[in-house]
Amino acid sequence: MERAVAVKKLSKILGKSLGYRVDLKAPDEDDRAEARAKLKIASAERVAVIKQKEARMQEILQADAEYQRLKAAHAEAKKRCDELFAITCRYRFTAGVSNSLFFHIKAQGDSWEEIIAKLTEKQPA
Image 1 (tube, helix red, strand yellow):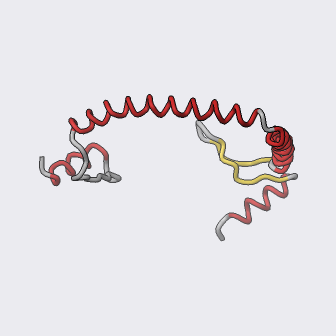
Image 2 (spheres, helix red, strand yellow):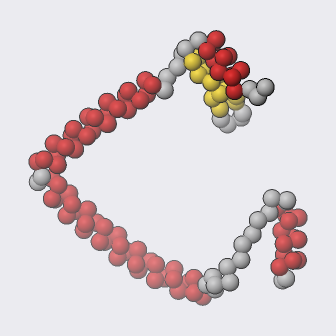
């Protein structure tokens, strides 16, 4: 099929926002099938090596006391930061718009006056 005919048919199906691309160097079905078969073997080899690597890493890290201390300190610091960040994101009042799936926040504040001021600030004059 010629490109012009195909584009015309596609534009009828997909509308004005149609987009397309052409890759003349792309493999054909036989090349993709061959690559799929090789991929199964390569994936199995990769999984085996990953398991060996992770087992070795766990063995080394379990024996490292300094790493274990840093790991525990990091977990504690992360928990504290997460708690503080959650506090910075909470407001008494929130206003926005809702569609059937999402609520889009337009302004947040500690009073209705603050929200109204923020919303009127954002409106174009």
